[in-house]
Structure formats: C-alpha cells, structure tokens
Amino acid sequence: MWVALAFGVPLLPQLQTTCHADEADPVLSPVEANRLFTLKVLPLLKKKCFPCHGDDAKDLRGDYQLLNRAGMLVGGESGEPSLVPGKPEASPLYQAVLWEGSEMPPKENDRLTKQET
Image 1 (cartoon, rainbow, N blue to C red):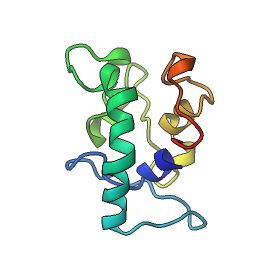
Image 2 (cartoon, rainbow, N blue to C red):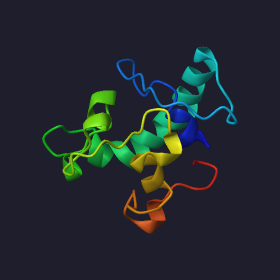
Image 3 (cartoon, rainbow, N blue to C red):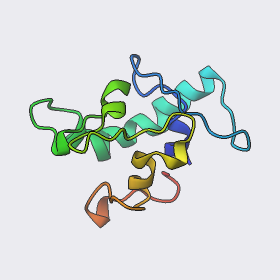
Image 4 (tube, rainbow, N blue to C red):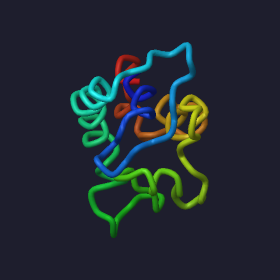
C-alpha cells in the first residue's frame, strides 16, 4: 500500500507526481503524504531501487532513474513512462514492484513484501 500511495506524494523535493489514487482510495493531506514518503517510501527506494536506478547517473541500469519525476516520466531504455498520471495501479513501476509483467527488483529475495506494497 505504501508504494501505491507514493504515486500521489512527492518522491523528492523536486518530484511532484500527478498520479492520484482513485476516489475509493485514501487521500492524504500534504503533511501526511510527506510523512508517509519520508518514513516508509524513501527508505524502500534507497534500499531496493536507488542502487541500480538512482545513486550513480553514469551507471543506471536500464538507463532508468528514479530520483525525480522527469526520469520516471521519460522511462528507461524503452522510452515508456513508468508512471501513468492519475492511474497509479496502471503505472508500469507499480506493476513491476508487484511482479506483474516486469519484475523489479529482479531478484526474488529482494521483492517488496505485501506490507511494503
């Protein structure tokens, strides 16, 4: 659930996604969203994603970076955006962390738990 909510909160100060959960999903205030991101989402990104898609701009796997909204919207080698504004569950990034279609992180023992997603 944290990852799904993250699509509606800032990923970094320069990142403001336009993806929002549908009306049936919880809507967080900006303060709640920033708290959720800081305490739950950012640590996951740092641990599971940034080593391959953020820490070193010269060594990005799949030519894909997660440090800002622009990188997420451009996508990687495919050139396909990893975010679908307004439809977080349709976003390839969200589907990848659930292992639906693409599988990210690629090693099964690095997968996000149900609680993390």
